[in-house]
Length: 137
Image (cartoon, rainbow, N blue to C red):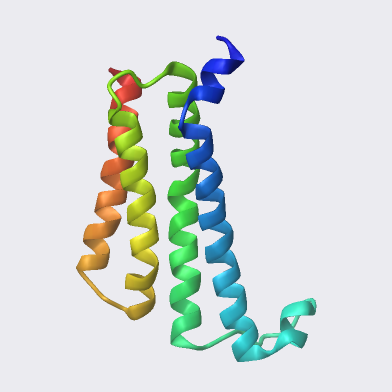
């Protein structure tokens, strides 16, 4: 496969934007922990039993962990589509659905909004499924 084919694909740029999302969520959690426990704790070895107890910190951590659970699948599918091609465009639609749902998921989780958050998570899963179907068929 010619390197220009991959360069012309929209998937590498979308993977790059997904890294921005990943780093944002990790930093958001870190900032909330620092706000609660202070920069000394965050910069230190964290050997003690002291852990953040705030509701918002916990939600940010769980939302970040949730992203990290599906992130490898997204990257693998996106790179697979970049290599194999996506003549129908459905793989790219699935990737954008995953990405958009992951962005919407953050404030829903932080606000503690049930059901809608779960529907958005299912939307992200649907996006991954769509990407996978394009690769399989």
